[in-house]
Length: 118
Image 1: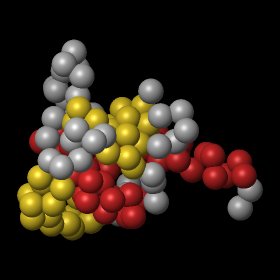
Image 2: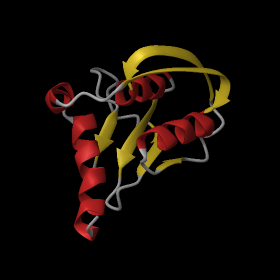
Image 3: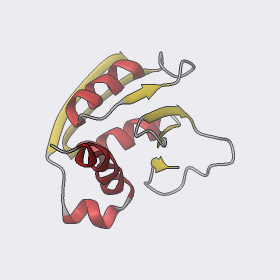
Image 4: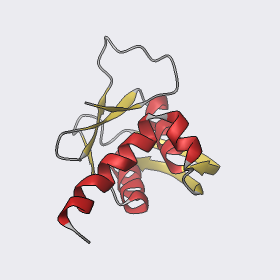
């Protein structure tokens, strides 16, 4: 695989996450996961393994406890729902790493878009 392909894969995945119309057009496989009192860091690691993405969790939110069951949902949506429930967001930085951190006070919680690209 060329070096160019390694750079474009994370960008393509980010676009699928951020653009709902693209996500519908090229749907991700549905997953079923269950977490019982797992730390947000453990949840992020599970999704990183599943997606092949690099996900880093901010220290101030890494110990948040997650208890949830998600059945037959695309993984970006499942992760988005978990993050939204804990008032955190994932941002894709310039190096292609997703960083999970607290939502800025100025960010409205409305809408379903939780993963954001900057």
